[in-house]
Amino acid sequence: MSNLPDKKKERFYLVIAACLMAVYLAPLYVLGQDAHIRVHDNLDSNIAWYQVLRNSGELFGEIGSVIPQVINGLPRNAFGTEYSLIVLLHAVFPSMTAYALSQTITRIAAFVGMYLLLKTHFIKSKETALIRIGVSLAFAFTPFWPSGMLSTLGHPLALWAFLNIRAKGASWKEWLTLALIPLYASIVLGFFFFLAAVGCLWLYDLIVKKRWNWTFLASIAFMAGVFFLVDYRLVFSLLAEQEPSHRVEFISSRHDLAHSFRLSLKNFLFGHTHVMTVHTVVILPVLFLTLAVVLFKKKDKLDKTFLFLLVLNYGLSLWYALWFNKLWIPLKENIELLNTFNFARFHFLRPLVIYLNFATACMILWQTGRKKWKIFVRIAVIAQLLVLVPFNEEIHYGVHHKTPSFREFYAVEQFEQIQDYIGLPKDQYRVASIGLHPAIAQYNGFYTLDTYNNLYPITYKYEFRKIIAKELEKNKSLKRYFDEWGSRCYLFVDELGKKYDYEKTTNKKIKNLELNIEAFKNLGGRYIFSSVPILNAAETDLKLLKVFEHSESAWKIHLYQAI
Image (cartoon, rainbow, N blue to C red; front, side, top):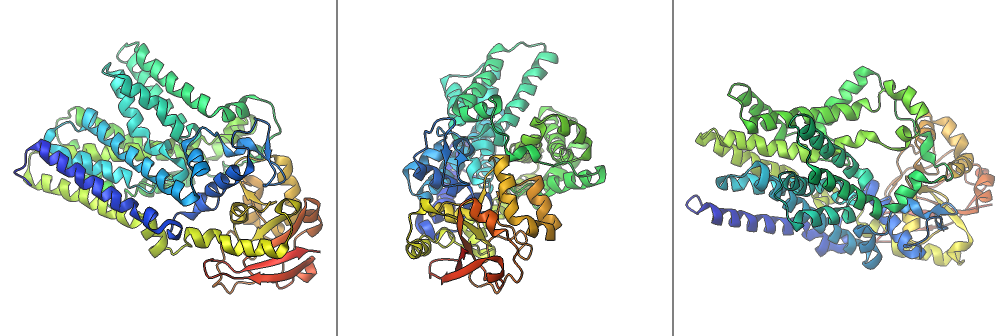
């Protein structure tokens, strides 16, 4: 291998990367509905949302339209734009097929984007193909939030295009890239913060280098414009007067400075669930080792880039932590946008920053020219890839955490049995769930009073709260969770806490449920699906009708009727 010319060596590494990518994605295609994928903010929400939207007939619904299947009329705008490719994939293909295709598109785009960025602007040497390709593949293997699509993993591809335009070496390819990414990314889940950072780069050129790079500025405005056109529903929600959403009551600033500092270190060391980078074991030690090397040598351009990225890395973690500090309370009480929009998400830039930092660190060690450092770099890149292997969804959720498969989670045949037993058209009654995500009932076509959505009318939150008021009073944690956030509009039960997925193997029972069943019936509620038995059902005006089990379901469903 060492005797191969650099060009052939790079091609060989690319072929290996393609094969590893195919193996990484294979379980989604081979197992289909028996695959294990992320539940949190995925199966419990987004995938069900796509299904509800597809079945609603409101995919291209008007701005003011509603979807009656959820909370007696959830605004269509809560489901986002119909011009997002992930929404269209789920509208055309079965859910798991759409999910597999989405994962494939995202990871390939992540790899290609990081590879182009490194090869063009950071790791240009022909002999360092292993660094370029290895870091790019590791970046593509990070366990990103699935419905985020390219909102974070698309940053390298976009930065490649912007840097080319900035250097006045761009062609139609860069402009086409900036036009297409908004079709498969969200501005609020990553690209608002990315474009703000690129805007700071333009300001740096203006202030420090005295360069009015109008083409570069136009490219930033162009991509922002495409995002706003694609997500026109979001623009309307921000600009038009409408009924206040539950987001106006968000309370996020609770921490003192000591807590914020600890949170910043936690984020810096371990990351965040929506932008997991798995950088703790391999990348961080490499960064600190490289820092020691850089501090005792004459600085060149790459060293300065490395130091800037390292400082920015922690700076983003610090900003994330400070966003929840009490210092913001006066502003958040007077400026609604600071409550309804999560500006902490500047830390969504960290996957790009961390892996760029890793690549520059490896390059600095490689450039020492010492054989032992080159061996170390090879080991570090391979080690990072190996560290990411257990985070493959099938391994992580099918082996380590043993969550239900797609088929077991949504339990379609079991819920068909429930529907047949009830024997009424689904739009003639409303249901809610206990110890079970309402997304499951929604996916199966039931009309639910409970939901998990990031945008719904605050008036509905108040009406729904009447049902669970006594249970919230028993549990301060649940009360704060619902009152100060409330995106999970669930039938919270003190005895169950924040666990919403009691599987059929559980021995858990509810001994003293206190729901306002009259308030439940006033909203149209008739049935409750509970994953655990309710021992005092009769005392709370509920009647157990039947218990449903199915070999391909993770749940034992107790069907209760409000009486």
